[in-house]
Image (cartoon, rainbow over the protein chains, first blue to last red):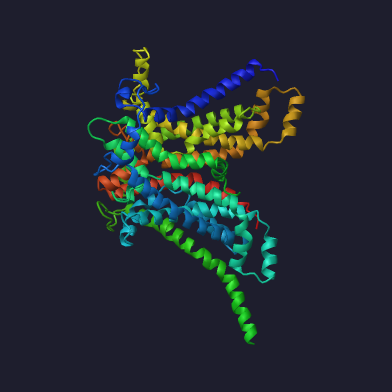
Length: 283
Length: 298
């Protein structure tokens, strides 16, 4: 096909939008590797004249975040310590719930599922006050464990949704046949459903990982300086810096906070999109 | 007799086990979603200040809430932000989806580029746009450096315009998601019907307007539900981009709730504002969940 003017315009538009979406990433990247003076003199769009990794080193291990000059490293590790158990527990519970809600149905299960699903959508402001008190009561205030608990509680709505919709399409006859052969509840789950759950488990893990890593509200409300996740620390770094604002350090920190989810998106983008699309409740 | 008894226990377990497995999750949801909603609702009718307190004051907190200037600003901001955010994301998303639906080379790559902001934290987006829109070092400074010295763009510092910078950053983050929703919808449309229309002499524009877009109704609906509830819940982006400022110019209900509850020690009013947020979201979500689950085949 020869390139008609309409096609050229089409590709030009698509390229223009690529620039639009990539621009902030470009700004973050180039400004994280140049000296501060090059930014403050109006050179935000330029490539660095003097390349330097100092802002990265500074953001990672030296910058003043909150009370101590620790850099973002401890908070980056906090986020991992929070995300890994929270994602694992919420995914396992979601898989079991989805299994029950599709293969062992009982009267009223759709209503129960609907009630669980509403938990995906509530504005979390409605639970902040009682949750703060409950975490105190459970002795989990200001700990990573407390954040894990909160994310599990509000993650199971999503994981249940994913697994329920996925298992709904799985042939129930296979489950019934195995039952007749004498297989029990957990044997069927372990031997028949779980080996076929690869794709949805990936979708669910990616969705929860992205959401929990990126969470700010719970992190800001329920953590103290020892347990703050990366998003909260980044915000503290950027907002509270007294004296000269070290934009290059802020940008380096922002990229650090973005890297884990960006990495997941680039390696497993297909599953990420599927997770997003599962917003439709029926599946 | 013994065998019969064992069987009936087994049969009973067979019925009960699934419910036992489901019950921890149900208990968590019952307490931490519904119990907490109930608790916060009660607090919104109480005289709670710094700590929860259980003296009943009726609608006093709501009366105070609606008379507060900052709440007025927050609701107006949410309306401006929400409407622009939903409309611009939908139009841009649909436009990009239609562009990408024209048998594009490197479609996968372009899609990846359009959608990646969705993987980022709103705090990251906020930091990037905060400094990009900052007149001292961002767009304005760059334009001055490039020689356009009369160029001015200082919305982020302007009380009347700052809310629009939040729209800019939020649209950047989410429009790719809407594009993906519409693109999935477009791919689900029957190709034969489009061919028939083309044979009948309908132009591309007419095909989209008459046949394709009307069939995207479900995609519009789910995009609307997701965008509306994201708009009402948006908190991180506002905190990172403007922190509610300048002054209180970009306050939204979520920042209002946080500030009244945890820094101004007006927990009763904070709870009342959370209640209004919940009711607003419920008005969007409950009809949606109802219609989606109602036709569930049993």
